Length: 363
Image: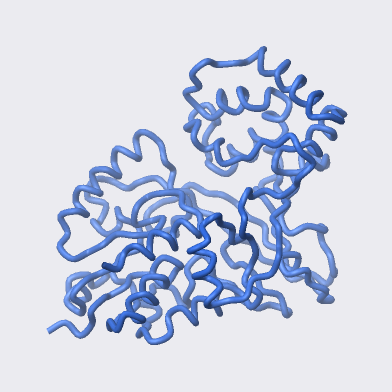
């Protein structure tokens, strides 16, 4: 007989949220985590007294009060506001695109001036029905911003020309005609004061946990451990890539401890030219307004994903979405297995969306 009510594959925010809800409902849960730590890509590790985001910046933001109230049951949050900057060959610009950006780019002082300049540039390259990211970006902001702040960064991030990427990607970038550097237009925003790892530890209290355990290596025997499985890993890997692998982007992180107390003056700096190999540098102490004598930075490099590598970003386009639908049909036929999370449903979800999805999983 099964020993558990639920077997949860993965201890990231999706798996942790479900395990917490199920355990609170009196269900017996086993979490299998293939890494040697919990919290998935949100994992934070303390180095030199600094909570380091080991897998890139994770800034919690949401307009969903239910989700915000939920996460604050397990962590206190600081008031960090994400205000990244772009470095284009030594020129510094504010992100998201706002009046500070337009003033630096063109000397515009008023929203009227900025709108007029963008409209002037859009006329030269406007496409009525944009079919790719390049056309959509030129429609949105014109040539100057596209060439300096979008093209190089995006092509490094996704490993493809902007003309080969779907226009939907550019919709994640805000465009504002105010002097506001707050990247996320979210009511609630911040970072857990003692890190995401501590938050997830509290979430999964009462559930049994096994680290360094890959569910897929012994899928059939693991499946018999519980009445139901909540699977948050890659959906194509679950089916042994029987329809072929979906496409993802992999990210490499070069983490360094520096004797300097302040390396770049901001938590997030994007390098938007093609010549700089990394896509961005994170200085982790600035997420918590740190005053430590040393600092920790991580350079991020984007690579093409291959099976066996850690997938980070689903590459949603027509081809991959069609392939995902084939896997989705296979998933629907899997008895008592529920696929959740960014990888399990092949969606570029933010953290709050992953949690909201998991909160509605337990029935």
